[in-house]
Length: 265
Image (cartoon, rainbow, N blue to C red):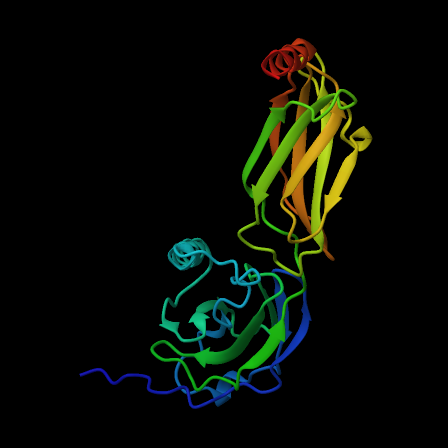
């Protein structure tokens, strides 16, 4: 029978991180002499994985069911990348990328922002992987939050005669902060009769604290359409926006309600 190639019998040296941003990292290592690798030296495998759920807790606001979604997300991500392993261990999903034997550096993509990750490399022959290098750890940079969820906006009556049209807005936190949340921004944009929104740079902005997810916006125009654009912020910048369009109440509704209240007094 045919004999196998056995263990490559070689572990690369000089493996180190060169640079990383919020979703990628670049590594380099010492040049590998094919003569030192037993069998047919076919490539170099970069193995990497996150510290489990490093960025998932969102300040302990993780709801049940997120873990299932996270698993599904990582499986989808794995199936679309240049990946050859799918083993799971206590550290989270292990993924790998294979590069040519003559390469001395490579970049990996699809990392979670603001998370601790581990990476190591091993040589490959036609049948086996060699003993990998010791893992190195690194933290990706902050990214921006994913969109706020369950955004709602609804028109309200004023508390007194001095208040014109009012809209109340509430939302749930983003699924991923991707960094340290510094607060939320709400842009208040008017929409004209033709359905065109005013230039976004001219929209007034209201800010809230990280734990504040409700705003009551007063003194808007009656019987007018507005678009409210809401997003979270980190030190890396503003997150992906979510928006809702709302028509404020006509002025006669306000007067009608006051008339009703007076009659019942």
